[in-house]
Length: 167
Image 1 (spheres, rainbow, N blue to C red):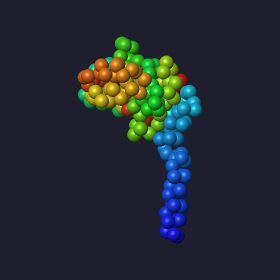
Image 2: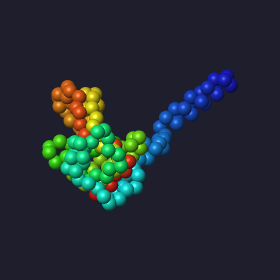
Image 3: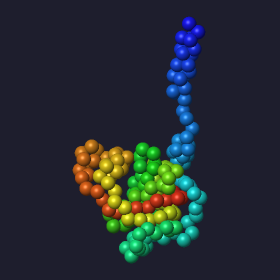
Image 4: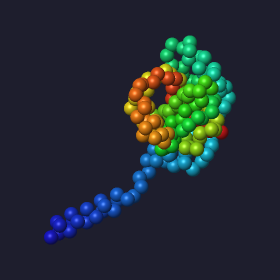
């Protein structure tokens, strides 16, 4: 009987702890991005020396590989509406550059679309798989029909940011 009571007590304790919210780094970063509209996210940076998207595109056209330590400014065309875990920056030619955040270590506000961003890190050419493109489309809130139209991988300019300022 004592064994049965002990097992019951342990089971109840386990069930009670299921509803508690854990404090993870990811959860804290997401909460911080959700409570503010602008500011610094990730590594603290300033705007000094930032180049425009047109300059970055020109640099990448002659680069052999990635460009590290570059600071760029541009308009956020869209942002992940699930967590704020990526943003697309308008390249000025109707296309965008996906910006992700180093080690998935921080997020930006989901309301960043239309705002100006300054970010630092590395630019590189990347092939985005169909699965990833569909995932990003789902994060954007596109319809199932629009998502199913994605059938080819995409080679595109990408960026991994260490730090971001949303203005």
